[in-house]
Length: 111
Image (cartoon, rainbow, N blue to C red; front, side, top):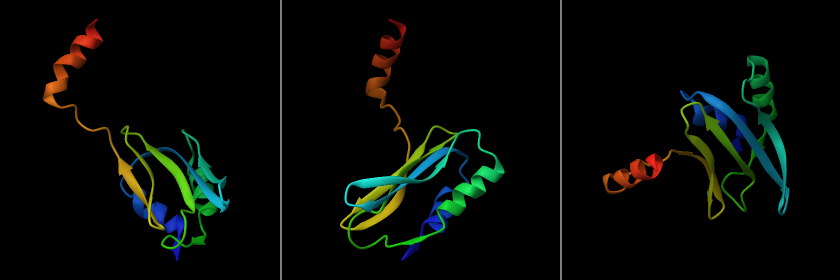
């Protein structure tokens, strides 16, 4: 069993959160918001968000139970990954543009 709050805190450690939304699947294909953290949140709103995530769930058996996204102030984000009944948070960032494409992008932007 995993605690959604502890998992969230561990995943975002050191990152500056912009906003987040977490959903939980209660019945097959029926996802309901568990916690929403709006941009510009206060310390009190962050605590309320974390308290809404303070529950145990099975992160390693059956189908995916938690869904959602976390957006960070640096332009990166995290989403939920799932494979073969196991689920986790995964941090995402826009990949660097390869040198082969860079000239094309400059020309497109200038035109």
